[in-house]
Image 1: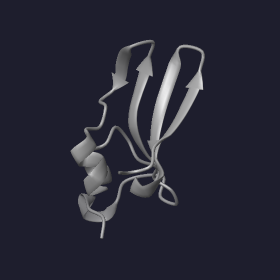
Image 2: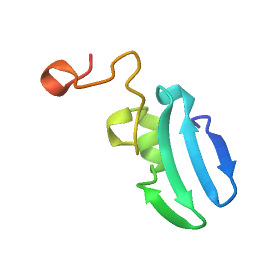
Image 3: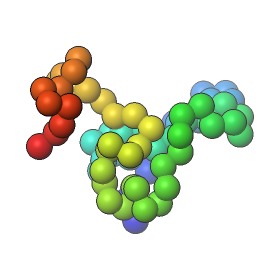
Length: 69
């Protein structure tokens, strides 16, 4: 199972997947999803492309050919 870190601030809750490059596994305000939650299968694959968001560090803009190696 992929390790998940939960961050909360009042009614805002965010799940971070460190093994997926720090990608967001979901963001909720109360029980309403703000960003698409990741499925267990997506987390197990470790493919950031299918998660809610991923850090663009050290890149801050577009990636050449819209792909990662």
